Structure formats: C-alpha cells, structure tokens
Amino acid sequence: MKNILMVLMAVVFGTLTAQAQETNWKKIYDPSLNGKAQIEQAVALAKKEGKKVMVQVGGNWCPYCIRLNKFVMTDPELKQMVDDNFVYVHLNYSKENKNLELLESWGNPQKNGFPVLVFLNKKGKVTHVQPTGDLEKDKSYDKAQLVKVYQDNK
Image (cartoon, rainbow, N blue to C red):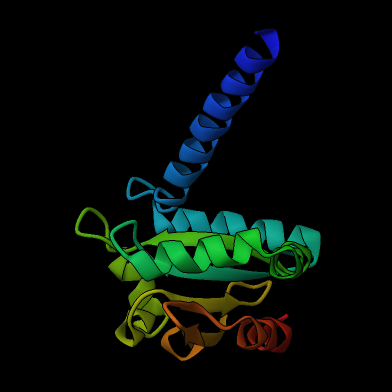
C-alpha cells in the first residue's frame, strides 16, 4: 500500500511540476520592463563576461516566440552555445509595451515578423538582425540553421 501511495504521489508531483514548467514557457516576456534599461544591463553584463547580446524580440502572445525559446533552452547543445556566447534577452513587443523607441533606434527589426533576433556587440551596437521565419522547420525550428546563426554571430 505504501508503494502504491508513493507512486501515486510521484505521478501527481511530476504532473504538477511539468505543468508548472509548461506555464513558465508561456511567460518569457515581461511587458512591464523598460527595454532600454534591459539592454543597458545586458550590454554591461556582456562586456563583463566577454560575450555579445542576443535579443529575441516578441511577445507572450506569439506562439513561435515561445516555441523558439523553448526549442533553444531545452536542446543541450543550443543552450550551451547561447550560455557560452551570449547574454540572452527577451524584449517585449505587445500592446502593453512595444518598446518602439529602442526598436526604431535599431532600424525596426520587427518589420521582419516575430520573433526576430537582434545581435549586439559589447558596445550595444547592432551587428546582425536575423528574421526567424527562415529558421523554421515543421512548426518548430531547424537546429542546424540556428547553430550556424549562433556561430556566425558569436
């Protein structure tokens, strides 16, 4: 009886944990944050750590934005590449906060659709804008193409 109870508790706990993790994937953008301040902090950290900044522009309303983040963060090789080379920032674009002033200063990369990746050097200057539509594959993303983009921009 104890074994059955323990198994049942493990299943329930595992299900709740999985649901909590899934919910977190859907809230990666924070509309309350000031994008300019976010980027300033990221650039300072990147400079300190000898990295570049990779900004994923999008919103919690965008399924492909959530999908890209989850794809990258759950693939050990991609996650390691990002962690080793970039300060990864999620810049919100939604009706609550479009961060238009910042995006305009970058040449409006959102014109490429969402999500869009913007790579910044250690001084905060845009070095590359990567539309992600070209990186999609079967309602997900093409790992080999993402690896190439990361390698080309580190």
